[in-house]
Length: 158
DNA sequence: GCCAACGTTGGC
DNA sequence: GCCAACGTTGGC
Image (cartoon, rainbow, N blue to C red; front, side, top):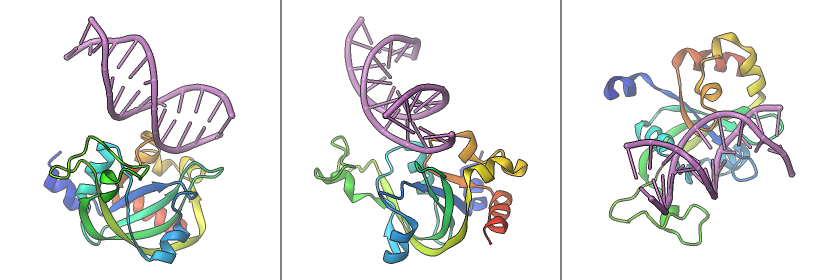
């Protein structure tokens, strides 16, 4: 797949967070936050592909009923994640050089928190969403969502 | 809290 | 460069 074309098409993403660490309510309070701590190359590459204005679903993971709970918007494109250089951070990476940072983050802005989240169980039940990366590659914390999938999700969430 | 699935590391 | 061992993620 050609990267440029792929980037043109992908306007929706899904980003996971454990609510105990960072929740949709935390984002609502802060309004704008860096999405730090991503330490997986595939996820990082997705962060690098994000463009200002892209929309991202906020997903709460590792809870009893994992679900899409909100929507956010990319307001700053990828830049080095400072936590990789912070030896006191849980995200510290001793192998990352300041001159050649390994990990990146984007800034996101709160758009909305949904009164009725769409759970992974809901998604699994929906045949038209069966090819979502969420179901195919459950460990990827930053993932693309197709336009068709996004439209279906947005309809369910409204 | 368990454990399957997956990613990374490092010895050879 | 293979692959066993290990570590992490995340649904259940």
